[in-house]
Image: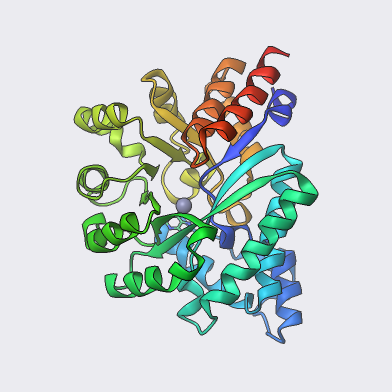
Length: 333
Ligand code: ADE
Ligand code: ZN
């Protein structure tokens, strides 16, 4: 099955570019920027990756970003991910970035987006992998800062396909960002947001995301299964769910494999993604293998997961169809 998964044309829709910063690149960027890291080796950095919930992960994730300072740093970060993803036959990716994690420490918005954008263009022409950017707001900052970031993004509107919401969910419900999302919609952005797993008020947050914000997709959203009315709302609207099994295993009590099985059986558009692969030790290939092992997935299940993913992409219909045809040809092969 590992070989079948390797060849499978894949699509990744829940991937934080800052969460792809591997310890090796962290050292390289620290050296380039004259920053002293409080670690002596790559192994020491990895050993410090101990987290058992979302806040403990986020603390290490934000600390790690300090080495990202210049446009070439963001280019190298994105290029490294895209190379890795292309090597796993990821054909298309929608990539989150967290501008406020950089502007809040003095790195200008345009440095971040220009580096990422240049990598996406080069990767498409050199590696044949296509990608688009989703700008995430940090939900533990004020809504006014998110709105200012949204306005700052408008000159780059054509480089960003949609907006998302991430960081610490506790006490930061979707409705806190209602006005920001309304404006984002008016500007033509598509809308998604994290409804992280096993949070305080998870089901209420999913309800708000769907009914009050009107999202086009839900990131994670596993707890929707606890409320039949949410399952119905997700099905009725055809919303996709971007689930991240290995990440779940780090920040909650399990990979939530059984929940993914149920979502598949319910015909929901559930997908498998890597979230923050440098921190959770698994890119999309490893996530699919781990899930296939846990659930004894069939080839049809795996193809269905990727069909769901290509179907819920924020691509024009003709490109979706081209990727789906590639998938069908592989499945038939
Ligand atoms: N930022 C990066 N990864 C995240 C996650 N899994 N949940 C919330 N915020 C994040
Ligand atoms: Zn995430």
